[in-house]
Length: 84
Image (cartoon, rainbow, N blue to C red; front, top):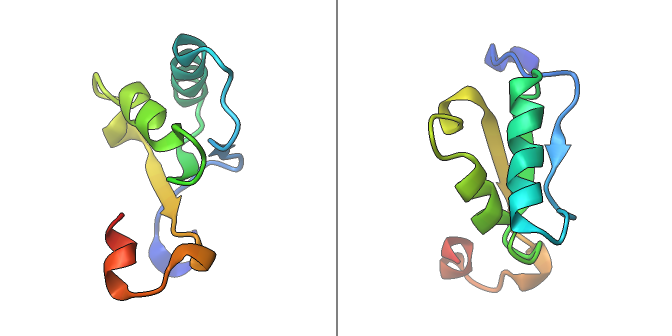
């Protein structure tokens, strides 16, 4: 990842559109991690993406990946909005 020294996988998993089944979504995230994907991207405006991703990263999975979450600029009016 540039000059950071972080070694991220060639492919990442965008968590915007998970399967409707939470169980399937968690399985999908863990499958990706188990097969070498270590970069994940989410945002709180992606329905329940952050919640589901958090559940998927329990049981030791969180320390295996790099996680990015975004703030929707159209929804930021003041500094405190970043904390949502």
